Amino acid sequence: MEGLTVVVTLAIVAVVVLSKTVKIVPQGSKHIVQRLGKYHATLNPGLNWVVPFIDNVAFKVTTKDIVLDIPSQEVITQDNAVIIANAVAYINIVSPEKAVYGVENYTIAIQNLVQTALRSIVGEMALDDALSSRDQIKAKLKSGISDDIADWGITMKTVEIQDINPSPTMQQAMEEQAAAERQRRAVVTRAEGEKQAAILEADGRLEASRRDAQAEVVLAKASAAAIEVVTGAIKDEELPVIYLLGEKYIQSLQNLSSSANAKTVVFPADLPEAIRGILNR
Image (cartoon, one colour):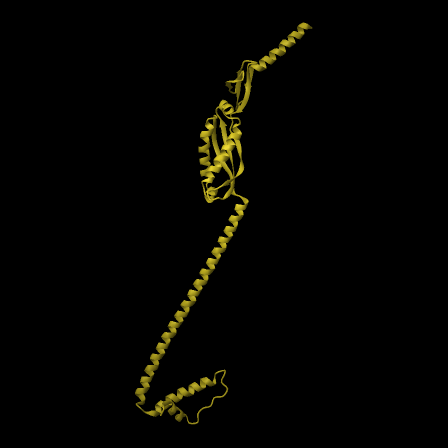
C-alpha cells in the first residue's frame, strides 16, 4: 500500500510539474511570461516550455484586431455649437510586452485619447464643416493617435466616426432657423411678384396714356384740317358756319338728352339766333 501511495504521489507531482512546464498558446494569442516577478519572454502560438514554479504566465494578450467603442460625448465647435459625436477604433497589438507594461489599461487609455483628440479636432471646425467632414476628422484622428499608442506596441488600424449630430437643443434651433429662412424667402418672392405686377401695371398705364395722347394729336390734326377745309369752303359766308355749328349744337343736345341724369331737354325756338349769339354776331 505504501509503495502504491508513493507511486500515485509521484504521478500527481509529475502531472503538476508537466502542466507547469508545458504551455500551449492558441492561435491569435501571445502569453507574457514573468520569471520571479520580472518580464522574461513572450510565448508565441503553439507548444512552449517554461521553468516550473519559477516562470509563470502573467498576461494573455490577443493578437487579433480589437474593436474599441468610443462613448458618445458633447463637443463644442468653433462657432460655439454643441454636437454629439462617437466613434469606433480598430487597433492591433504588435508588441504585447509593451502593451501590458507600458500602460495600466490600454483599452481605457486609447478610448480617452480618441475622445480628447476628437474634441480638439472638432473644436477647430465650424458646425457645418464638422457635420460634413467625417473623412477629414477620421484622418486627423488616426494621424494624431497613431504616434501616441506606438510607444505601447499598438497600431491604429483605422478609426471611424459613427455619429456626429447636433445636440437636441441645437437641432431645434437649426430647425427654427431653417423655418425662418424659408419664410423670409417666401416673403421676398411675394414682394418680388408684387413689384413686377406693379411695374407691369404702370407700364400698361404709361402705354395707354401714350396711345391716348397720340390719338388726341391725330384728332387735333384732323380737326385742324377740317377747319381749314371748311374755312376755305365758306369764304366768309355766314350760313354754312351757322349750319355746321348748329349741327354740332344739336348733336351735343342729343348727347345730353341720352344721359342718365337728363330729364328734359328744351331746344331754342330760334336756332340761328342762338348760333349767332355763340358767335357774338
